[in-house]
Length: 261
Image 1: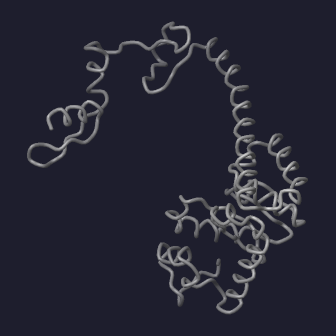
Image 2: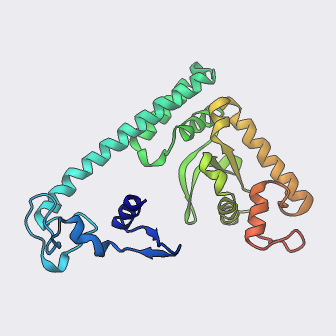
Image 3: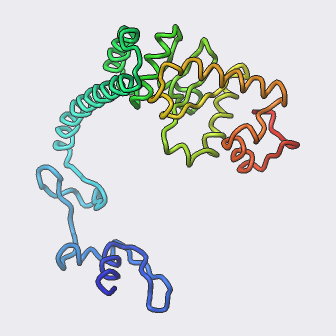
C-alpha cells in the first residue's frame, strides 16, 4: 500500500490520506525527483540539442530551434501524406473483405469499388472508415449521388445523399453512449438543410453483415420518419432512445415540444 501511494504521488494523482481525505501533488513538485535530484533550468532543441531561449521554455511540449523546426516541418509533411494514403488503402481492403464476408455480389460492385478507391486516394480526408467506403460503393451502384464527409453548418455528415434528401450517419459502438449529443446534432443538421431532409443513422454492424440492403433500409427509415412527423407534427420521445434522451436533456415534453424538430 505504501509503494502504491508513493507511485501515485509521484505521477501527480489524487492520493488517499490516512484519514480518508485526498491530497493533490502537482507535477511542479516532483521535477527534482524526475530529474534525478536536479531542477530543470533550461530546455534544449529536440533535434540538435542547442539551448532554447529563456522566454521560449515550455516543459510540456517538444521545442525546436528555428532552423530545426523548418527541417522538421518539411520532413513531417510527406510522412503524413504517406500515412493517409496507406491508411486509406488498408481501410479499402478491409471494406472489400467485409463485403466478401457478407457474400455481396462483388462483380456487380467492382466498377464502383474502383471509383471509391481512386476517389479516396485523391481525397483521403473524405473517408474515415471502411464502413463509409462500403456505404459509398453500395449507394453509387444504386444510382445515388454521394458527398463524403460533407460540411453542413458547423458539422460534418458522414455521407450526404442529395437525391434522397438524406444525411447518412454511420454509427460505431461509441455512439451508444452519445445518444443525447447525437439527437441535438441531428436536429441542428436538419434545421440547416431544411424540413424535407432527414438524418438517418445506421449502425456499422448492419452495413458489415448485409451491405446490399443499405439503400432500401435508409429509404424505409426516411419514410417512417416522414410518416411519424405527419402524424404527430414532430418525432415523439417514443420514436427512439435518441429522441427520448434529447427531450430529457433539453427539458422538453410532448406537450411542450420544439418546432425545430
